[in-house]
Figure 1 (tube, rainbow, N blue to C red):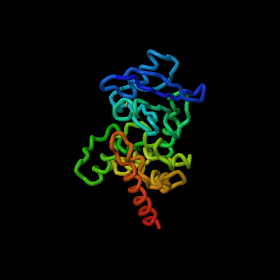
Figure 2: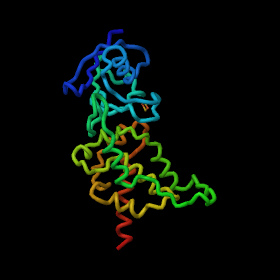
Figure 3: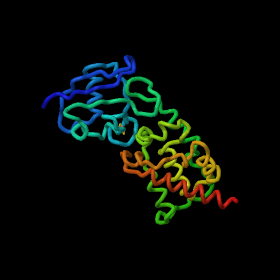
Figure 4: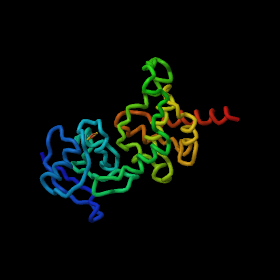
Length: 235
Ligand code: FES
């Protein structure tokens, strides 16, 4: 098999550097980046942890599309043997392929995407009925791995740096449907505010590219309806 032609973003030169990488069966994009760092240039910086699609740390732009690189096979994305790899869009770059995730997670906090428990240690464990519509809605949004692929895919985030983005709002929708959470009023206020759900243009890139096949666009649409009905109930 001919070598792969890999273009990798280097923050030092502010340009792409090209490497030839041996092609192998069942090779992932993360395998390619690891090969470059291990055999060709040890100064290349990138981030990964689990290699099995659980930790969400390995996301990068691959031929212009945000992807989890540990689960993206070269055979699916190589364009005549060529792959262009860049850091995730919409986030500051720390070095080479590593982005600063602080703005992404700061917005989870700002959107109040954090569980607010109401029970104490001395309360009995209260079982949750997993068959209710509310719980099914919560579960549908819950398997986010915080990879920021949706955040990188979102054109609204690109144009509005106050916008919380799909992952934070998807998390909020899961919590809004959590019967054990006690922070609903403040949460609905937060996501009705300047960075909130009503900024979404419903383009759907978040749902298209979510590697876990979640549907943040549907979560955000549901939040728009919920905040509107909450607004009219208060009047
Ligand atoms: Fe953990 Fe890719 S390395 S999701």
